[in-house]
Length: 323
Image (cartoon, rainbow, N blue to C red; front, side, top):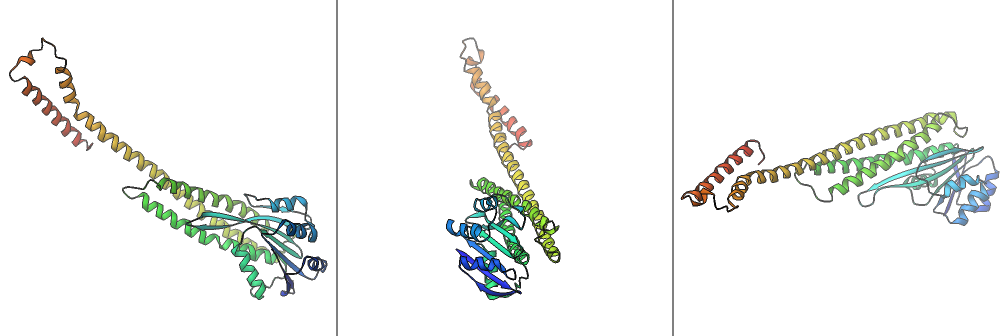
């Protein structure tokens, strides 16, 4: 689906135009055009990216093909950016949605396959003509990135809550069989988050330094603020990941300790039965020349020796706290 917004002097003057009308708007240098491609068909993609804007084939290819990492490419008269919005639900776990952007002097194009809260919010603001006042496409791009980065905060809160729950379960005396699987899922979620935040921070950092002519100097402080937010989120994500790794190590040590306790108990049982095994093995040979076999107190004596040494072994192991 193709959504379009046309601005003039910070005011919305048109929206959702036909493709032919968009070509005419492109020719008018006094207008600012934002086109959002929301899960478009191949025909819509081709008509906009190739027909209206004539983007480079490599940029179009990178836009259409899914990318795991954020990136930025500087072409002659526009910027191409690959960014990722993040989301987290207890049912679907950690998820990312790719958002591709083309930023020019008088246009801004967004492309995504799935609905995004940041895009929906910005479109609602543009439709109401409130809190936007885009005097340039770089301002629209900043607002889009700001909304997208703001969504990192609730995701981090959800991941922190899950981490705290895992830590509480880990400290219990017994854990469920699925606990290890939950730990591995959480580890995967944090790894994916760190994989997204760091490259995205590098993308924003490049814009904040003023390396691109598509970003006006007056907006550089705003982009630096976005970079600082991502740096903060990255630090938080790293600290959570370290906590998870520490919890993982504690869990493995706890499991090893419990296994050792079980081995100690079995070893203690084996040690207690040693007197019985020794005496029973000795007298089980049934040699004819063994004088104890003909003794009146042979059976009682053997039993007494077994009980004495068994009790002695038990007391020794008890003092060593093997029971």
